[in-house]
View 1: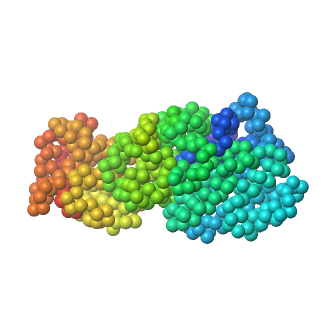
View 2: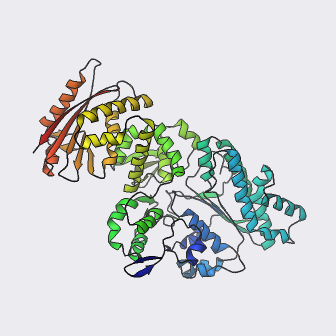
View 3: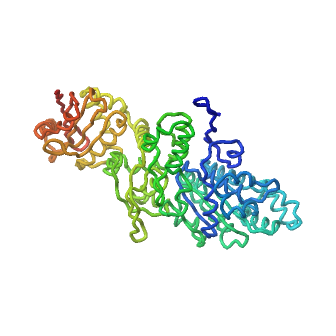
Amino acid sequence: MIEQNGENMKKTSIGIDDYKKLIENDYAYVDKTLFIQEILERGTELALIPRPRRFGKTINMSMLKYFFEKTEEGNSHLFSPYKIWQTDSRKEQGIYPVVFFTLKGVKQETWELAYEKLKTVIADEFKRHRYLLDSSKLFDDEKKVFLAILNQEADQVKMEMSLKWLTAWLERHHDKKVIVLIDEYDAPIHMAYFHGYYSHIVNFMRNWLGDGLKGNASLEKGVITGILRIAKENIFSDLNHASNFTMFSEDFSDKFGLLEEEVLALLKDYDMGDKLEEVRKWYNGYHIGSSSLYNPWSILHYIQHKTLKPYWVNTSGNELVKEQLTQKGVFFKEDFETLVLEGTITKLVDEGLVFVSLKKSKEAVWGLLLFSGYLTLASPPVLDGILYSAELKIPNQEILALFQDMMREYFTETFSTSWTGLLDHLVTGNVEAFSEEFQELILDVFSVHDIPKKAPERVYHAFVLGLLASLKGSYEIKSNKESGLGRYDVCLIPKNREKLGIILEFKKAQKEEEDLKVLASSAIAQIQTLHYVTELKSLGVKKILALGMGFQGKLVCIEDKFLSF
């Protein structure tokens, strides 16, 4: 138990995704039981509900299993204290056979290993229903197949038919149609795409889900969760009766993730109600339908550790996103500059991700970032043909920090220059060391991304903004803002006004023979002539470093001038 101010408080449920264990062991729980009512009232036979990682998908699916499943001991005690028991939906409790698969652990690096894990997951669910081997309603040949699947001795065709057969046998035995729950259906697909056995996993999933869910007369209701709605790759092409409830939908919008009133109630339970404002900046900002949501994983970690920092970290979950960001050079584009400065960008996104398009289209990455939870909607999306025009932004400080961590890791792994040391040189005014290391970094980055010799000035601008993003803890970083008689390119405003303020101005050589030193000096003159220091001076910054940067292709020259007031 957690003890604070002499009071016993409920344990935080970090890592616990079994609803029964959570309730019976008196862990902290935010009442999401009306998800059950919405599933029943929605009326759809098969619901696909994609949500970002760590948003409570597995615990909600576990809750559905314990609510609907008919058991000898009964599970009404798990629900009677909660909102669902005050509705007519309680009469549906404990009357159905339930099939429940979670695929979140199928993340192997080869098809052979992934297939073995899939067989184990399927066999485990057959073991839960092994009483069917004693059922008088199953034929001997069916029991033989059942036993082969349970013992993982069945061939792939039979494993692909396993879902359909299990539901048929359960309906016959119980004389009741079956609830099918499949959690994190796309976890194996992400890993397969990343490790190169994508076609194998797609073929299996298409057959397994298609045979088990399409036209299945034994199906009462099916609920499928994952991170993405994978479209046009035949996973759900045959399931025309499936209803998709993405983050663009109002349905189920408040059932995954935490509303602010729910977060405030949790914080008060742990005598942390006064922390809401700073918690909001760090963990709020996800928009699903009309609901503004917090990441529950991060909230529970914050309550336990009482430290504001990124908790939404999972290496395997970040692999695909990191690959896309680095391969497409997103870190070095204007869009990324806008995002890290807490601005918005507008992109066309498809509600259903097409994995093949990640290689073919540079724009597909934005849909991946949105539906994975790295970006969020800044305003309601607008349907534009078959796509949506979506205004996107980074949701909160935690995700901004994750972007910065991925950038830091990328630079550390890819380039010889230590970029953290480079930034230390900058903020301490060691311009000579900064210039030398910055030139080395430019050579590495531009050769890797094949940026043209006469690259637009904005490419350098965006690249520098990406580098500076990790300074946001100690500096306010502004770009293209008015000060004095014009607009500076970049300004670093120290939160501690006694530290060095920095103004950066970029100049791109128009001709190959142009003197970069002269160009950089003209940038310094522009900073002074147009009084770009006005904003820093008005904020009480006494020490200011003016940096002029002259670029030509992969070459840079930096001139500096220290100003004191």
